[in-house]
Image (cartoon, rainbow, N blue to C red; front, top):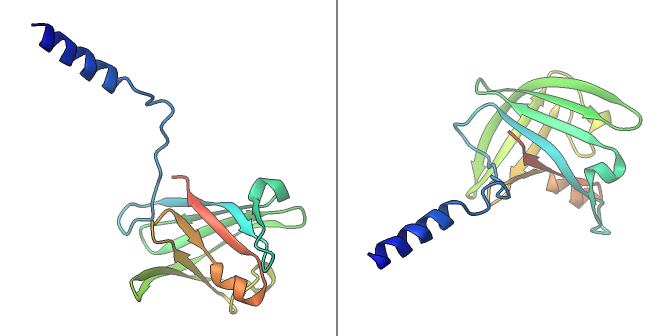
Length: 148
C-alpha cells in the first residue's frame, strides 16, 4: 500500500511541474496555417553583432496563409506599412526556403532582395526564418521567430 501511495504522489507532483513556466516553441510547418513570424534579432553584418529588434525599434511581422499568400507589416523610426504577395516553398540540398514574391518592387525596403523577390531560409531546427544570405553583401541579416 505504501508503494502505491508513493507512486501516486510522484505522478501527481510530476504532473504539476512548472507548466506555467514552459514555453511552447513554434516551428515552421508545411501544413499548420496561418503562421505568424516576428522579427526577433538582427545580425549587424561583418561585425557579427547580434541586436535584438526592440533595441533598435524595428518591427516586422510576416503572416503566411494556407493559400500561398502572405502579408508583411513593417515599422521603424522612418517608415511603416504593409505589403502583400505570394510565397513558394522550395527544398534544395535538404534545406527549405521560402520565396516571397511581392506585388510591388521592394528594393528600397530590403537590403538584399531582387526586385520584388525575397528569399528566407528555414533553419535546421525549423524555429527561425532568416535572410542570412544578406551577410555576404555586408548587409544585416534578419532573424524571425514564429509567434502563432
